[in-house]
Length: 134
Image (cartoon, rainbow, N blue to C red; front, side, top):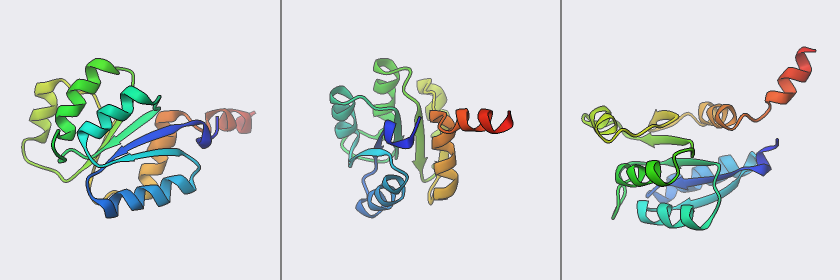
């Protein structure tokens, strides 16, 4: 499968960071949906099929953490990458709410590493690697 076969939902309240994600990931060929809040994230998920969610945690009026609790129940198979500034209680909050995420990146994220993780989660290029080994 190609990157253009996948839709990524990116929830980030900072306009400058949304622009960075848009530029870097649209150049890779992904279809992108960019939102600025947890409530918009939930609305988009109910309207549009998404292959991967990338979210910040500290957003309003519904935080990314609260939205993830809802997403975990409604869309348990949806892979999630969290990109956020670290805060002391984060690990406890995730464990307490029993939220499963694929990966956590602390801001600022290394875009090359993020792109590699996205390809790994979506299994992009796996068939090419198998063919190359033969």
